[in-house]
Length: 127
Image (tube, rainbow, N blue to C red; front, top):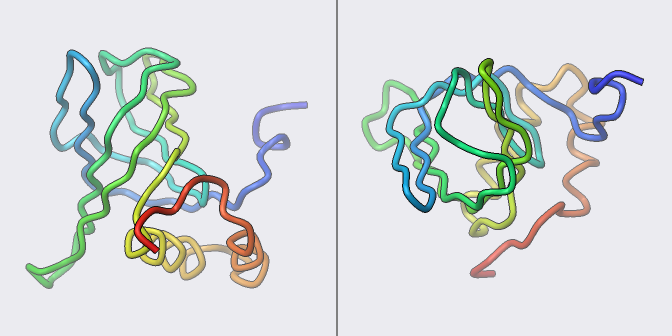
């Protein structure tokens, strides 16, 4: 079974800039490729290793200079020359609502994507 068939969450194309902070590294304006309820994928050969914890700052691009910025805690699950896959570990409730809307509004099947959010896949803080 290939990786796309093992995924249980809707994944949507989502290109934006992400800052990544780990022990020993701070990366700024890394390009994302896609996003799901459970994580995101960053493009490029980055100095990150599977198993590392990280803090993510996702910059939502738009015409509004007050566009939301999402803050999440994550864990790197795969890193190679093509890119890095990160699982979300926790985020605040406001970030979770923005994530939910991004995935649902960009999903090929919004109803199925919405149902995925009925059960959070990680800790939501500050509720």
